[in-house]
Image (tube, rainbow, N blue to C red; front, side):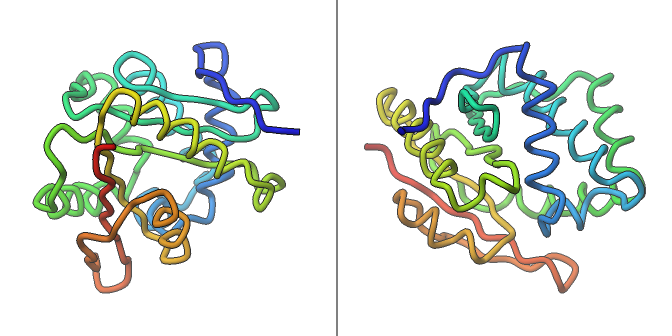
Length: 192
């Protein structure tokens, strides 16, 4: 049976945050820039904040109808979070905030196609991995971006993700190493 994908709503935020928390619990980037204590709760809370304050009001976000996968895209003109939201984000990063700030400064110099949207997040529950759900989410989200004529970019810190993204037309344009041990790949996908 084909996977059905729909637009994420405010009512989905708690479930979406839980999905993404589980999906990123063992991800190199979040392990590197989110404090260790209560990491799963911190990651879930961060994902909820980004979905609620950035993706829903400014971008596009989708969830599958079984509630096992989420994807979100942000446009290039997404406003920065308010000071109050930024303070919550900083608190959730805990003792890793300085690391994050230094990484973001360095990564801000990496190329981004003009007018491109960013694939901000994609994740599935651990028991949904390998079922094709991530592929279905990518197809749905990228079809919508293509329909609107938008290029896309992303960052990933897991080398095994590269072939998946390459299947969808992304190409590696930069690779950098942060603090000598965290790799990040910047990938671009052209306009249709």
